[in-house]
View (cartoon, protein in one colour):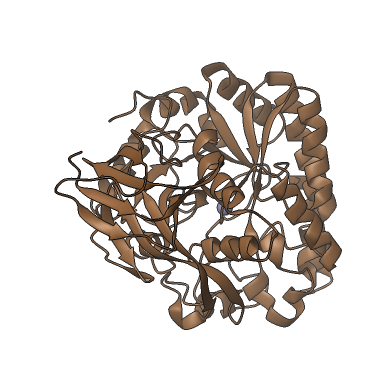
Length: 453
Ligand SMILES: [Zn+2]
């Protein structure tokens, strides 16, 4: 068989399991998944002996600040970090420079031409005074709508009637929303009280962005999901109680997905006391014990938490530490570390290799209409491939972070399993953790429009 690239001798991993097979690539797509040792003509042959062959990871919650506050991140740096770790598709949205109508989408696409190392979709923001533009924006090709139920990062809250109108509209035209769910009244009241007390200590975080505020907002969204049938996802589920509300709504017919992020699987609530603004993200980490953390991993493993995303929202150490705790920007960098942390979870038995592929590639691709072109290595899929050495050990260090953040909350941890080579459409985009930075990634229109092939 004629081929451009053949990845031979490896173990192909999908959600269905693992098997020894050769991957044959032609014209940027998987042309065959063949019995090992077959003859391929004219191909560049990559020896994947001892390696796992995974579809590239699909990270559907990423903020690259471009256009926007590019002193925090930009598309070249953020997608270089992603490429190095085997993430070959992202869905991006930037709060400081939102997409709210077809024109803003067109402008953003134009601004990003030639700036991405990987495939990317773009999400829109719901703005309370622009709800009538949702349908046209969906048809123009956004991947989802981001909704904030509380004013955060300069994005206004969508509440009450506005929220109901939004969810109804999205249900009608078959769109989907990613919802940041914290209750506006509760967070605003808590902030007022804490500021009156002149508190600036990091301990304010869990009082300000409380578990109750998250539960109330998730409960309201869950009701709307049941009532309207809209496809919704709760962003960054922080604790088992939130997952329980989601499970209850699913039992009543809601199509409600639950996003897991590494910070809720691996960081503890009290770390904010030592690390201050470097643990300021919202909702905050809520784990108080190893048992609670284990429960979150169990929820990911059994699919209650449907998929993993980073919520990559980087700031440099300088930006994080300027001003007092109130002033510090929310968010963590994640693209440099998420794949490694999940591979380590497989090495330590918290997940299987198949579950890593399901939760960070297949399932998010399916949720956002990217599958099977992305998130799979079936014949016809994009040849987006991460080769993983399952026994490589890595010490995570700030110095190795490619994101402009230049640091990671996981520095000092040793992980097992690492991405060693990465291909986008059959072309190598990173090797041994070094991205090529050739910026060959292109925009993928969302499912509301006819997909370009
Ligand atoms: Zn986010």
